[in-house]
Length: 287
Image (cartoon, rainbow, N blue to C red; front, side):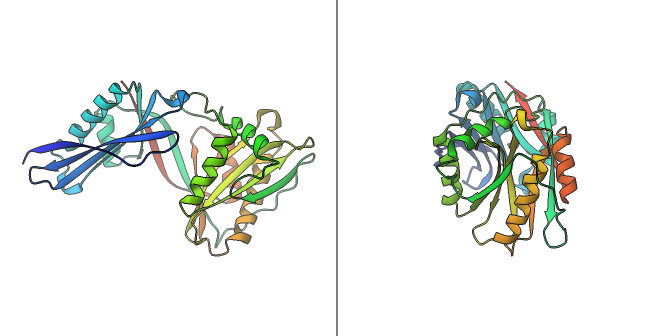
């Protein structure tokens, strides 16, 4: 049975990105697969396109994925994308499909979980010269500027062979990111380390479902370069776990993902009780 591709108008527009989409359907209109390409409006990421391809398991092996990928590649080139990026479980069907079509491994992510019901969080000593602050949702007005500045601590995080550019943040984007989480019905919890001058030296974020159940997700963790090597990440993340236990007593666990070459953060997570669950390849295709 012949397959046709239908370009779609995707309503998923965000302030800093938008998606274009394709539906693969049989002649009678039955959908058998889809593809999405997310385009970034940020100059530092405009050369990257995030790819997502799905084919119904019963329809695999008929060339539908290849057909969808061809449409995505054409669409990406039309929008001046130079590199396609997508995450896929290691050794999965999708992983083998992408390898066959020339995608290489840009980096490997290790996903780990902390079981809050069985794991006891170690007591971590305070770091002299700093104090911890915490909040839920948007950053307080008196901290939002230095909190935004602290995000530059993630600019040198391991990124494998992927040229991610410098991710530029301003106060507007910081506030908007917190608003998006709230609009999704989720809750953002932040712990930050403040130095003697009153500026944030590092932070760690966790997002929890609105009902406070299931698993929470670690978002960003960063320490500014001039404050590293003092144990701030371990101190902040341990305090964050205690805070999460207090605020969300019904939460089952916490999830985190770390680039396999980020040995410092992996060591921190191991000490806190996170245990590896599975690995993901972030594959790329240069156009």
